[in-house]
Image 1 (cartoon, rainbow, N blue to C red):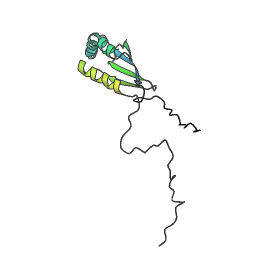
Image 2: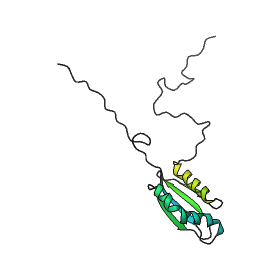
Image 3: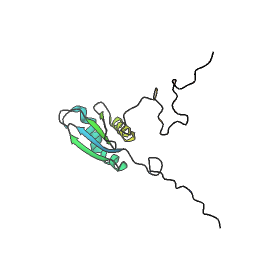
Length: 140
């Protein structure tokens, strides 16, 4: 009588790109002034394009606030608890849409330089950490 072949179960946790996609942005807050001319393009965007933009991104909460005597900004809140702020005072309507897309595509993490970054590993090295104190001395 043959014994059943036992196989290890594969356990994996869902992550972005594996089983599910979890968007990192949670909320966008638009802040503008009704009177200042620097908020004119932001007001135009909010009246004409915001509803269509919100329908394209149903996973993002949209909040519009008045901010008297201040420059217009948009603030993105992310799942990791961080937020990013972008000033909208010198942007046209198309530029505002591009900046919003930048906020939607961002992860909310701090920007890290790509050069001079140390290698990080989740597993220990097979050979261990090299130390000059434990190496054999060369013979001349």
